[in-house]
Amino acid sequence: MKLEVSHPEGTPHEVDLPGKAVIGRDPSCDIVLSDSRCSRRHAVIEETADGLVIRDAGSANGIYVNGRRLERSPLSPGDTVRLGDTVLEVLPDVGATVVVAPDELDLTGRPPTPRPPVGRHPSSSRARSQSARSTLRPARVAAPLPETRPPLTVTALSLLWALTVPACVAGGLIVALRSEAVVGVLAAGTGLVLGALAGVMAVGLRARAAWARHLQIAAAGIGLLVCPFTFASVTVLIYMLRADVRATFEAPGRTTGAGDAEPTFALSLLGMLAVGLALTAGAVLLL
Image (cartoon, rainbow, N blue to C red; front, top):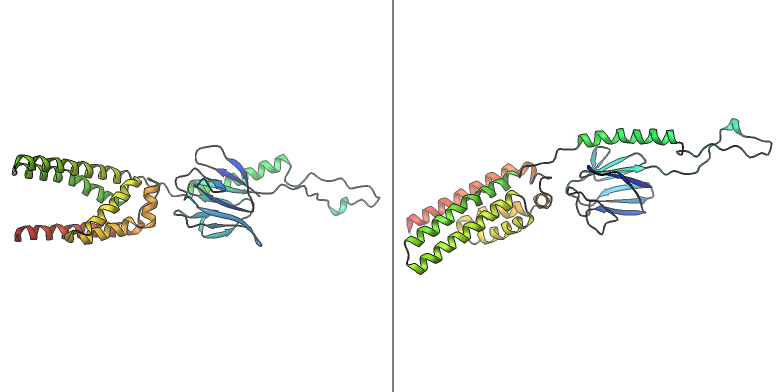
């Protein structure tokens, strides 16, 4: 069989389907898709005893067959499969089968006059193409709109890093004013460097850059050693190590973080951070 591959922007094109094909963004796949919503190895299409079958290969956004999200589904000519923003249409095999009606049989020994091969007539091909197009449009309309804002927890982390910038700079300057010259210069410089790093983290998380996620995981790992903020760091690690959150940073603007669990993570983070600040303030007062 053949597949017609349609991207949101671009001209549809046909690909020959081998006995088994891996579909995804990875260059090693049999069918490579330039779609940020597709996983590196998104789905597998293969011939089985029951015919052509497609199955999800552990993708982040799933597969939709004729508008329904399924883990595994048989495929027939005319079916549409949506992977991210890409739509695949299963095209029928155009054979050379000759169909002869019973009343056209000629017993005189002369060979019968064959009809045109099924599926070769231009009008029937055009009608089938229009029918397939009408099937495609509802599937695309039904697709969820891309998420353009960062998830709630990522936004909270970005704001916290942004608030850290003036705190680091002000802290360094206060220590510098109360210390000797050499120590004061080192304190001021350290405050400025830490403030710059915090600003970079705020921007990176806001843009959902992959490197910002890795740095946030590293920062949370260091935070585990700071007793007042251990629980806040644990919350951040659990959140950042989720597969759906990883997909958010791999394809910015296309996914929704932890989904329904976003408010829980955001409130837990802020609550644990408030507890850590209260413990820190109490320790300072006692000392």
